[in-house]
Picture (spheres, rainbow over the protein chains, first blue to last red):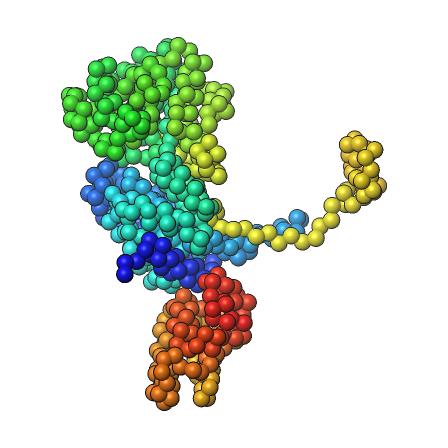
Length: 477
Length: 109
């Protein structure tokens, strides 16, 4: 008799639960030994996995995927290895509070097609560091390379003494099965990185979830910025892995007074401004008209491929297709998120209008994710940051690499970027090991003398006003 | 390194373990339990399941692997319900069975 989806999910989770039971007995040293072995194996496999990912998905550039694999292993490892994640992690004699870290249990991790092996290895490392078994559901377009990354990590983990089944990969391709596992009562947490639908499914499953969805990253170039530097930085970010990082720039916003200088700089650095008729052609292949979502056929593709699909001819060596737009929203398809080397370009009459545009773009599907500003005016940097709803506002930095952290700034290196409540997430942090532990607090008796010195009958007396109670509470005896 | 002491009467098989029941040790444990069960089956010519009580004494154990938990489950299945139990667990081992959701099924105390 054929196994039902529920029976298959039960089997996967019963293995994971046994792994969790064994894992929670590990001390910090044993745990770190496993993490070190996995990091080394992952880093050593960075090139083969990058090439596999590009070959299987047809997305991105293998050399850039190597860099992502390095972030996911070497930099993530460096950021977590000295973290205490087992047993007593802090002890404060002043407050009398001792914190104890406990694992969560089986974590169900969904990985995307755009960054498949790097996201898998990063999630494996932070799960193992916190003694949580991980069940990976790979995007069906990246099933083989994700499974290979998991296999390499699993073998290294077992060799270092990790529990059997501490890493499992479920067969990709069945949305129903993914949802059955997501809703399984033995799943402790879902770690979902992907599109809106996936993240929504994770949050609707009934299990706790950290789901991170799409962005739509506006980048403002202020008049105080070093324009050649800003343009060079933006290009290095937007062309990185053909624009597949969800924190990559989507729109560039400038004031009228520096438009010419910025345009010339983009042109000088081999970016091509599309004329209006070509913008229409690119829109048609880049964005699905009915849903205003990016077409999967252009995600992570080169400029040449996109130009061919759109039926346009661009100068040889073009690095980014630039589309000057007059508005934001459904009448302007390229104002939405497109993970490819295509950039919307906006010119505002003045600073105020520029910031209005940034807010509109930020709220067009990218709330809580990331934004960028190039400026040498601290006042403007802070103004911009306070009106933009983004977990990360990166300054004078390529947003792809800057938001991921670890290279251009001291943000925690992560392949899952929290988007706060705006993105229906529980946090705006770059997700890392500390997000995957339950912290127990042992609270020793420390009397609140001020509270105890108040005659408790006063709280029961309706004639006691707030000021009387405050006076008594703060009174020196 | 683990040591296993198995003794049995007609009605009861007592297994006491000492050491760390990691994956490698569990392989050794699994083989010894299987051999003993086979011997008991042959001796009594009993039909499956064997009508004896099995007690796993974990008094001197401070770590168990998932493989050992599987051995417990496999052994418990070979005797009538209620005839298998695990005794003298350290609280951390008790918690391990609790997390696995098997403390009731395996009569852990």
